[in-house]
Length: 287
Picture 1 (cartoon, helix red, strand yellow):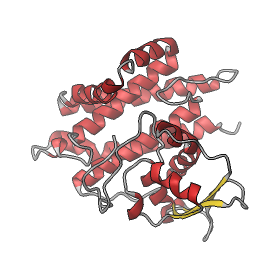
Picture 2 (picture 1 turned 60 degrees about the vertical axis):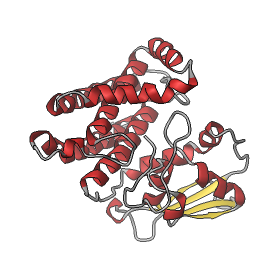
Picture 3 (picture 1 turned 120 degrees about the horizontal axis):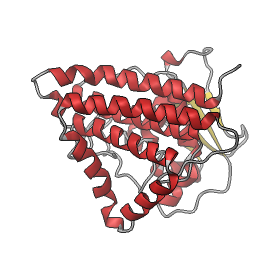
Picture 4 (picture 1 turned 90 degrees about the horizontal axis):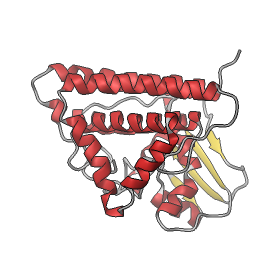
């Protein structure tokens, strides 16, 4: 039988995790200190980045298996708006304090367990929605969100290590999520979402395959509000790993331009984004 949408994205999530794993695994055995190298997210080292991924995998697993328990935890954590950043930072800080090998093992086990839980949930009859810090998601949607986070935090880690990773066809999941979160990005910034349709046309990275000149497209062809340019730039922007001014993205229409100024594919409050000129993994950044 043909695979489901969840099967496809879970396989790509597995590959994304393995690629990042291969980048950081050697750091646990060295003494040069790169496991504690500072990344573009203020106060976060490579260890904090991996700890954050492990922590959010744990939260996603709780949401998938015990949704009511997750809701209670999230409500308690967000009861004080000022404590939101502390909630996230504390999870990263606890993990980063572990010995490197133990943290790596924790992340590996957590992502395998989460993938199994999402696979199991997607195979059940009916329509299942998993609660989260933003809108609830399907199992495939949660897998997409985890892939987006793995890729984005992987970019932070690669920047800290002076490594430039080749973008892959897996970015299509990040791009699609970036498009689907257009209205969410407006709402978390206190803006009214646009009512008119948008057209997004992205040039995939060379390694993505496909016919020459093929685009990743979203929305009606005749939409007056339009966004176009490199898929990599769009993915970096919606994960707030680059400033709008440092991309080759083009916007046609005031609503499209405004969207690019607030684009955010990750759940939670508005991110700080990156400062202009920080294209090469510079200072400032979202977590």
